[in-house]
Length: 208
Length: 338
Figure 1: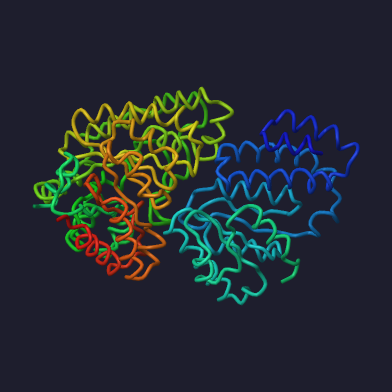
Figure 2: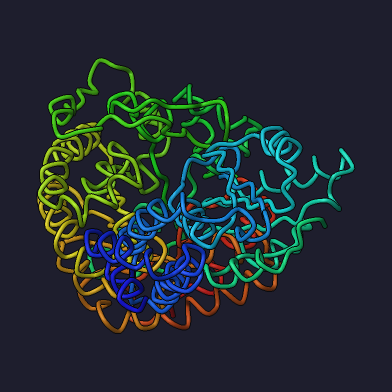
């Protein structure tokens, strides 16, 4: 499995594909996802934090992880998928930046979460509708600019207005977001890194 | 000494009466001053011009960014689909360059006769004699990022670097056409924006390979006629020495950069403009936090000139007018020479 970790970190797609196809005979798909793909993306996230990796390197690795995950997906037994954990994710209204969101989506999927990606420029109602439709207990909001980070507040206000706030843990992230800002708008968590975000998502129970 | 003379004094290597104060007030904050919604100004360049002028009159800083109308970008000329209804800025919702064949669709804009230069001319007519008026263009690397789409463009850097080179060389024609048109209109300087080339996005190696050569080419071209500000927001610290080699007159740096270090590294070659945090300090900080931040900037960069006090990036709409007044006021007092 170390070979797969190294291939993903280095962004070697063909190698990652070949290794995944070979080890699926020996290990369970779920173990490969949690012990290799998820771990590799944690290392990639750490390297970004320390300035060793940048956006192109992150995307290159995320694509490798996605490829390996797509090979493994049909082999995953349903009960092992993070006990059915569902996440709604999207970039808030007024913002079309999606790199950070897409990377986080890959990491979550490769860690066994079921991710509902609403894309970019998502209005509060779309988030609410998807939470109701899927029964997700996690909502991840992304924004790049300070103007659009205020749109996060609108989503939280809407959750409160509809009496849904207690049912959903809300995590906010993005360049313009800080821990104090997250606190000020009443979010449950500020995702400062991939690793911490993943840990937080894992810690949230299926029903809040 | 008027504002225009003050900025030019710095650009010519002289010591003015005080450090010029020139925050990045653009389409994010300016519309708020006249009570316009962002969209009002994005679709009406003259409203944008009036907003920028109103902000200048209200806050009394030294320089003004003259946006092309409508909005900052001639986005239709960039060929992208744009959503003007959802936020405070024009959102690029579809991308022009989906494949290599699409590069033929990227054509340099012809702004004359379109009315898009009218807001720039209006600003020059109103304050061009007394204030430093700067036209704004995107660098080729950033234009390609928009035209191709963020994920695809960042993926191309590894998967198809030859395509990236082709794209940025085609985009160069847009940067040059816009910059030349602005210069012909009479702006005193240009700001070339290349935020996606920062070390928060790509490695210094990729900056050297892709962004830097085109920055150098377009800046050298513009520098024959006007001073040029190179703006790279977020973390540009590892790039500073290379940025100074673009022949830019001014490097506009963000709050993630150590200002004293920047001054030390390149302050004898270029003017440094920056770098108060526009979000954490200006939008969210108290008056005292703003004063302290301005004082820190002055301590780090005021000595021996070659410095313009600014925000590191655009002032947000959410920044209060009192905070802006406080920023400019402290800048004028703490920036005095002699």
